[in-house]
Amino acid sequence: SLPKTATIIEVGPRDGLQNEKNEVPTDVKLRFIESLQKAGILEMEVTSFVSPKWVPQMGDAAEVMGKVHRTGRQFVLAPNARGIENAIASGADSIAVFVGVTDSFNKKNINRSTAESMEGLAPQIRRLKEDGLFVRACISTAFHCPFEGPVDPDRTLGLCREFAGLGVDELSVADTIGMADPSESYSLFGRLKEELPDMLITAHFHDTRKMALANILASLQAGVDRFDTSAGGLGGCPFAPGATGNVATEDVVYMLERMGVSTGVSVAGVCRAVDEVAGFVTRPLSSGMYNLHQNG
Ligand code: HMG
Ligand code: MG
Image 1 (tube, rainbow, N blue to C red):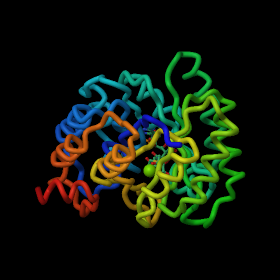
Image 2: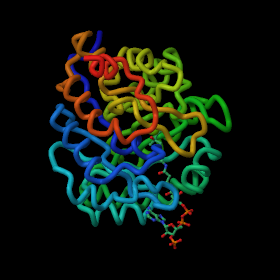
Image 3: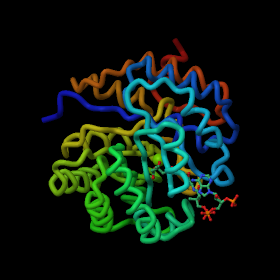
Image 4: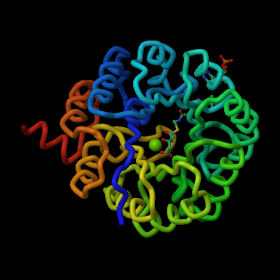
């Protein structure tokens, strides 16, 4: 049976805008975020404290954090000690660290092997937990790697266990390049829910091959009730060749509500938020519900 409620973690302002060709002005990002909050979003990745040389689109992270309305939970991504320090200085209380299961992806993304990243992050995570912050761990290439191909689920589970041992609050497990199929999703998330019953487990699907909604249904059936989604279906990691947008928030909310799984999020409200940024993004917005909204 399906859960009665599910939580949407909006990642559009971060995953969505990090991969855009144009730099979206900070005040537009802030209007986008506020509009998403008005649509009922309570948890959101608002920005990332990464090197502006690597990801210029997130160069205004401190300004975004300084001006964002603090309703609900604002996550900020940080890849290393420097990013965590800057995030805390900006007033963040919920930090998302991110590591890939495969070395080749992790090196392209954060210039370290997976083990080197974990070695650097372990003392940071312990300190964040001692100081009472919320720590989310994002696990990239959990199913497939753009460089190494299919990933053995035991390796993904191993990295998840390692993070659990460090005391993180949440694992966001990602299909970075949108290659997972529903049976793989059901199997991996089923195992995670069984092995780590007290952990918040979140599914992060990119929709490259249009399998994300099917993967979400399969994950729901495996007991997952938290989903990372991106308004308008924006998104993609600049260091994962072939990665396109995350599954669209408005499509996921529509599907869940139709099935009687309550999200507290308004489809129309999310579409109005997408209107705020649509003029600034260069890619076509391909979500079903946003297209209906535009054709009015
Ligand atoms: P590096 O070049 O190895 O860094 O990059 P470094 O430690 O050698 O430092 C080099 C310079 O960067 C120094 O400055 C540092 O101070 C500076 P310089 O002395 O040359 O002037 N620096 C920083 N500046 C600002 N913020 C920082 C920071 N760290 C160092 N945090 C680094 C390593 C991790 C910095 C770089 O690779 C990086 O920023 N990578 C970020 C990549 C990224 O943002 N990817 C997208 C997010 S992950 C994602 O999308 C996947 C996800 O959605 C899940 C999924 O779908 O799979 C989460
Ligand atoms: Mg992503």
